[in-house]
Length: 307
Length: 108
Image (cartoon, rainbow over all chains, first blue to last red; front, side, top):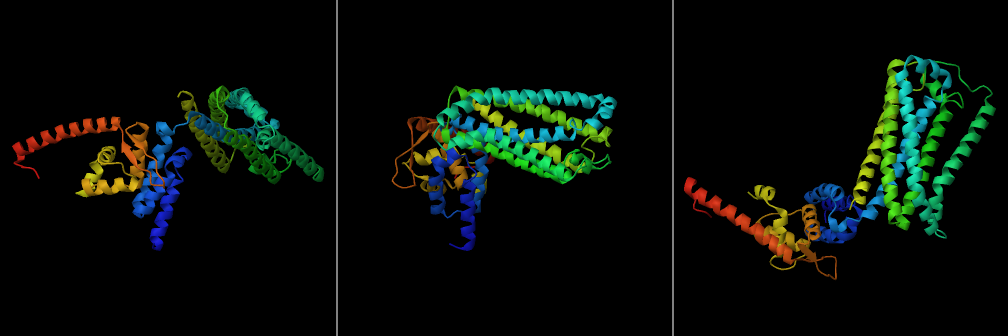
């Protein structure tokens, strides 16, 4: 086999990795045998990659496993929802938490106040939906995971955020003790927003990055437990339905925050936390991407509940 | 000519027609379709078709000792192939009659 043929063959095998797990479990060996027999060319690699898309979008009925689909959707939705919640927390820190600059902004621009209210209400509904829909499934999985390694995964959403909060509070306390007057006076620069009157911009950024890492770990735990324990039944169906509500509500919260951010940028550039282009260019695509992933996966999950 | 036929050919029908002869595995199907019908089926197209036909119960896998799993036509698959062939035969008859009448074409 020439170097080129070897590369093409590797590409064709890599294209097989694009297919859903159920499809691979059923056809992977056969396709590999076909590729070996027919000495795969670029056309084979391209066609395999192309047909992976319908295999995901409209899986064949005999390979469609609704409980597995719901579990996969729940894991993805949880990860994307956690990212949205993290972005919402940043939004709160850079806007509503800055009380001193908020009074004048909200009096002058009541539409921003309305955006804040919509954001608060939608975020509360979303958290409630996660708690109501996710708690029964989590408790059921916790029961079945007793004495198994999945216990650690299932405790991640409780232990990791608490650990992060404690570590953050200790860090903030130590930083403020080390620098007696860390609160920066008002300056029309983004660095003041990031300082947030607490720990300075770089510590704030470090806490944000650590927060997203902690969120990722917390969300990955139940995701791995769903794969390992394979729960089925009403609890999974209810959690999937609740996930749709949670994603819809968090989508509304995200839209309200984006609206508020744009209003702040346009009308109150010297107030609150969003008055430079890079802040918008980072925050808005982040919200859109996480919302797109969450809503796509939630839609696939709810379709599986109807089968 | 082959490129045009590839584009217009209906891959599920080609696979059903290939399996109407005898059970075949993936590579044997591509070889048979290429030799007897002049169409090259790529790996992605072939297994997209096989998975759909299997889901609809038109073909079924047979036991295999190695990774080359053969498939055979089911009774539903044979009925479907017969219906589609009949439809194609009707289209072919109409086309040939009109070609003869209007273009003087006598057929291959």
